[in-house]
Amino acid sequence: MKDKRSQEPKRCGWVKMSNPLYVDYHDREWGRPLHDERALFELFCLETYQAGLSWETVLNKRSAFRKAFSDYEIEKVAAMTDVQLEKILQNPDVIRNRRKIFATRTNAQTFLEIQKKFGSFDHYIWSFVENKTIHNEISDYQEAPAKTPLSEKIAKELKKQGCAFIGPVAVYSFLQAAGLVNDHEQNCTFNPIH
Image (cartoon, rainbow, N blue to C red; front, side, top):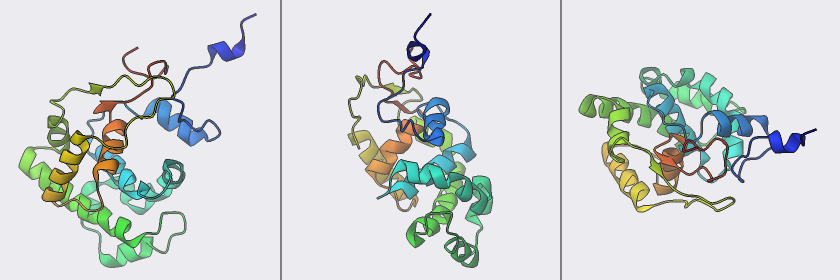
């Protein structure tokens, strides 16, 4: 009889196995090339919320954020009023940080401007990697960098475009999450190069 553990998929060492949301996020989303505008916007916002917090905290509040921000429909978020944003700040199910909440609207407005200038945010962001995922070779339990020269460059460009509450660390996390950079560990079952 085969050992049941040998049949378990291997995951990156950072995955918090005690949290099903975390496992599901790693297995189904993280590192997969993403091109949907709404999904890119949501992920971008989630990365801005993470500043100073754990990713687990953000994942645990994700469904509340989706509800608060109309499932991240960019046009709806861009049109939100100060009163609506203030109401979100009263919701204990979200991260109640004024700068992060108000940056969500600013970033929606900036996404719309980027879409006008470049055709889509997808086209704009993927142009930084020449429309191809950068595959890094991360050995088991090796930590990926927190930021890179690429994420520093993109953070500067996003700020020039008008994005708020974004820096090179959040940008690198976004690049990893949206599959522009593949930092799955080499032996991870979910590494797309397998």
